[in-house]
Length: 495
Image (cartoon, rainbow, N blue to C red; front, side, top):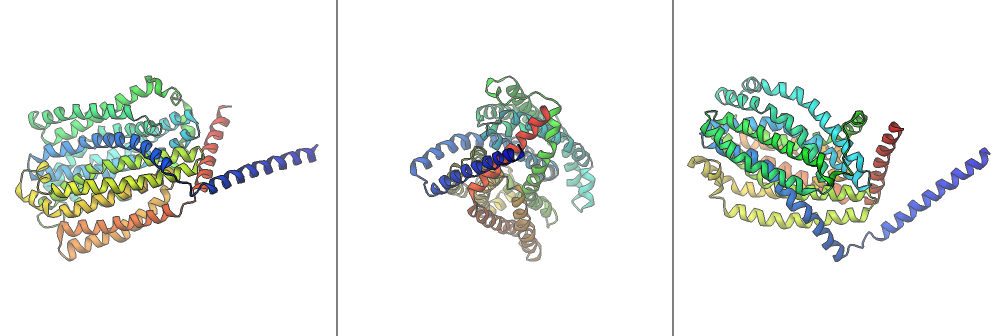
């Protein structure tokens, strides 16, 4: 009996290996079969995702930009302190939550491609629970942020105002911890309409409420922080209601249960490198604002670099939309075992990235004498921004290529590789060059910006090399193994 069972098992394994080899041969034979028809079809799919997704990201980011724009008309102190506050909030909180939630682009995307629909809801609940836990120590840091700024040598007047602004942002931190997993939940299913409606409604609400709180309530710059909190919670409520009651989420909706605790280890296993990958890059640009506070005339330098960063970050919504689209397409196709479709998705997104970068950079350069007035009405600030505009255009070009390459990395689950790339590109290359040019060679803000762009260029080169060396058939097998592992573990626990 034992011999019969062993023979049956061996035959089963041989049959399985034969099927896998046949699949690999078919995939390998189609490696060069990238037709124009398939290319055009993929362009349509990514256009359907990237356009609305860019609008979603832009609408959400405009909450911050509009707040800063209104505060900027209160004076240089209000603008510089609020800019530092928002930068620190991003460094210590928002970047961490955004990065950790990006793990769902791999986990949920591949699960959806493999038709493991209930796993999406379970992983979303797990992510929300984990991110709320992370918010508790971060909120404590935010409460004492003003004292920290003074301790590290920042201007006391700016530090006090920035610390007060960050304290009022604490409720927004918890809203963000719920919002980001919800966004990934809808994104990985290509349900863009709910996010688009919710973010646009929130933006339309934010503009008048921010104006009232900043200019009419007497709260001034603190009113902008309160408006951001209210708007973010509104976005969470709308998306949460849609998830609970919409028929579009019937297959992926899962009840809140103890099962969410079973996926904590799986989530953190990818969330930690995802957070490191995102934070290392985010922190680099936010570090520019802090370094500018150490230059002569810190209010001017901080204000100008903040305007430049806000401009690039606002426009970054466009390539980020393409990055989100390719992340969705790659993760879904790898989860389904379609390595060729994933490869075509990468070709398409690189083509689209070059086209939109050319258009947007040219438009931005043509308006270089104007866009500074959006953030400030002081001529000194606007003139300095005009001088920085060519570097801002270059920065957008590098950011665009980085956005789509990072999207590919998230779709494949390469966050750990992205973390090493960002560490080497920015902290071993970009930041040292920025410090040398800005302080040693006394190029001030221009030198700081050039240094970071050197790091961004190194990042693009490294990510391009990694992407170009990918074995897509192997990536598809890994994705199937990951999904099967998660599925089996869940099934075992529910038996």
